[in-house]
Length: 135
Image 1 (cartoon, rainbow, N blue to C red):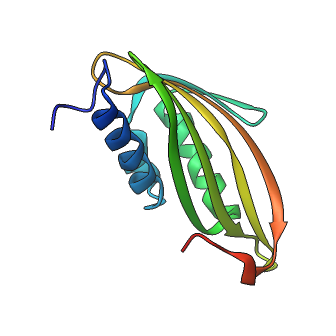
Image 2: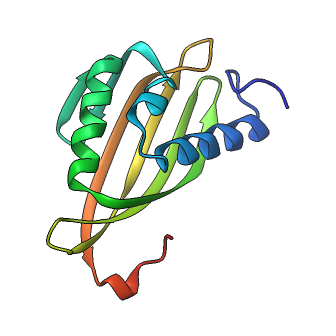
C-alpha cells in the first residue's frame, strides 16, 4: 500500500479513516496527537484548539467525561489533501446515562499526511444502553 499521505486514492483515503478510528478508540491522547501537525488547528463543537498540546489536553478532558467511548468513522468523500468523514460514537457519563454522538468532520492534511486542520460538528442524543450499536 502507498503511504497514507496526499494526494489520496480511494484505497489510501479509506485506510486513513480506519487508522484514525483505530487510534481514537485507544483513547490515548499521546498516540492520537501524533497524527496531527505540530500547529494543527481544530474546531470541535464550539471549542477552538491550536497545536498538539491543546489537542492532548482536550482529549484528556473529553475522556474524563465520555466514559467507555467507542467510535465508528466513515469516509464521505475526498479530494487531493482533504477528506469529509461522518462518524458516530457512544459513551456514558458518570451517572450511567448513555449517549450517541454523531456528526461530520472536515480534514485537511499537510504533505506528510499529518492533519493540519480539523473541523467537527457534533450532536449528542440520549440513548438507552440497550440501544447501543457500537461495541
